[in-house]
Length: 310
Image (cartoon, rainbow, N blue to C red; front, side):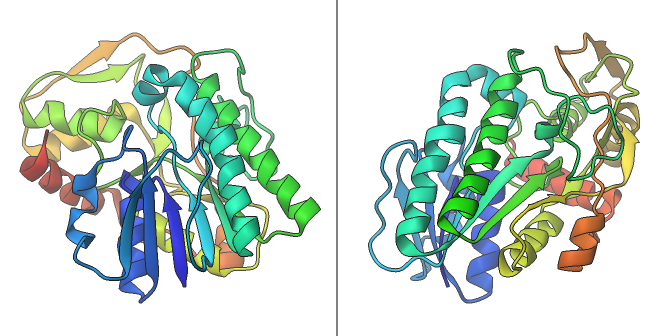
């Protein structure tokens, strides 16, 4: 297969490129580098089956030759990024999805949308199933990301119903691993960087809010299975093991051998209290479930940050 990955120089996009190249496919990574980084893919530049195109996908996308799948992963994805780039976040979710769908339609390709657990907002049910419609504040600061992804899902399903296009929608829950940016504001890199420096580890609110963390190799394995399936509706991909942010901070302090203490910070607006995927659908349709334990995944992520911190 020849696959276009938008956001191909990002954290997940670069791991997807590795996976597909490793399986003998060809990959075109497209990225405007607003939050992506060429360092994530520079090890692939010598591969004749890999191509990088610097391009903003909110503009018309032209790719010569056949394309078998378009995987739309371009978007700022951490609260720091989408609060810093609110309008580009909305544009890549709306205009970028439209342009990427247009290319997939022209090439008769499968289209995959990287959606997010954020479509569930601050959920009133736990765990979250794909049938849950969410509890989202459309005009809050996080709304630029949440609503961009919700709109993108609606557009993808419209193309599926109207143009009979094969589509895949993955709702990605918290993912971590090597190639995350050390200062992107998300819990895992933030806690690791502070712990490695023996500085206070900032935990918002009481720290009793829960998250579930999926290691990146587990995630991309699920994405591959979803792309190869025939299933057109949303699928949660994430790790259902739920822990509090206090527990995550304590675990990271222990694994780094740090002298850091937890420091309390005020809770951001619309910060979700719970976040845990129901992965019944992924287990049933894709025969997928995560395999990497939190401790194992954190150890390799810590090793990466020790070597590569910015």
